[in-house]
Amino acid sequence: MNKKVAFYTLGCKLNYSETSSIGRLFNQAGYDTVGFTDTPDVFVINTCSVTDNADKKCKKIVKEALKISPDAYVTIVGCYAQLKPQEIAEIPGVDMVLGAAEKFQIIDHISDLTKKPKALVFNQPVSEANEFVPAYSFGDRTRTFLKVQDGCDYSCTFCTIPLARGASRSDTIENVLDQARQIAASGVKEIVLTGVNLGDFGIRNGKREDKFFDLVKALDEVEGIDRFRISSIEPNLLTDEIIAFVATSKRFVPHFHIPLQSGSDKILGLMRRRYKRDLYTNRVAKIRELMPDCCIGVDVIVGFPGETREDFIDTYNFLNDLEISYLHVFTYSERENTLAAQMTGAVPGSSRGERSKMLHILSDKKRRAFYESQLNKNEEVLFEGDIKDGFMHGFTRNYVKVRTKYDPVLVNELKTVRLTNISPDGDVEITEGEEILVH
Image 1 (tube, rainbow, N blue to C red):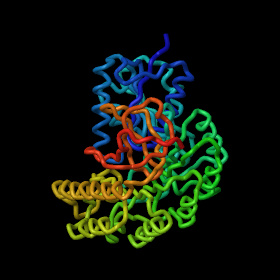
Image 2 (image 1 turned 90 degrees about the vertical axis):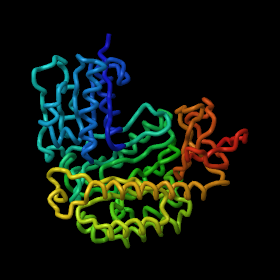
Image 3 (image 1 turned 120 degrees about the vertical axis):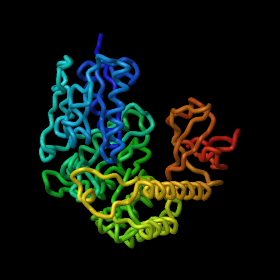
Image 4 (image 1 turned 180 degrees about the horizontal axis):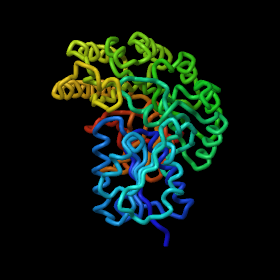
């Protein structure tokens, strides 16, 4: 009988793609992948360390895992494992910690499932994580997260990612195209491109070999994939030529997620971001000029050191005036070994919470306004296989979440539907009984 392995992933879409690839390594080694609660022999927890909360979640997941399967072998990988290996090794029940350069050699390290008195730690300096390892998620027939870039050469003062993932590095365009074709052959209809600094795609062995725009143009010709979605791209790397290409693309959808982090030039300077807000305004204006119905998501951090109430109101007003579709709001938390943690002007926790709440409310308002602007339009929806309260969901090309009564025939199908009203949950609905037009 095969050994069983279960996975738990914290953090970004990149982590999900890597967990899936690690899962395939276990399957090739003869393991069966099972659910977290199915008493596995091995737990693999892929961690994030963007916020302090992610660290706490890791400890809680280990505790829950051992309640389910007390004798299971527990391995921790991911960003937290690279940054704090010894701290993780001391968590009761952890058997192995693998750093950034070791996680894809997990099968070699985990061949013996005998639990030792102390956790084994394999963690080289992050400078050794200089090889690009391809990864993509698998198992969701509807969409796949495809990793094309890793690491980051930027030095934002709040961020630990360069310390956890190393320097910027990428796959070759031809390898990405080969993976996209493999994914297409599996029946997946949408690929989401992921990376730590996706727009910096093209660096290999420390030298720039390609540009992200070259990759976008090449992927647009891949047969069998209906949609490519860009997960997140820095505003200074989102060029006018990329925007113009997406506007007329056969396969790239009108949806951009563009980190802002602050609408105050003062705070952007303290963060060491590589742009001012005027550039961000210009990017949004160009997108709206060429793609009026494009979905634009924004990352923003509240409570950064030195952010006065006036600075926050500056950010709030800036976002309120922008034609954007939703926000991802992050409350600043101090991270060791970052310049921001040593800065003066710490914002009280209560103020951070208040500012976060204000931006969450603004995000809800922006999303509602965007969804209302899409009503009474015929849009193509890719339906997914989830069922909740008798409903299934899907997304339009421009990332409007649509729900309709569950119908197994619709799973992984592209249908053109008329968007008619917004449900109490905030999803866009199709009129009951309305004919669904086959794409």
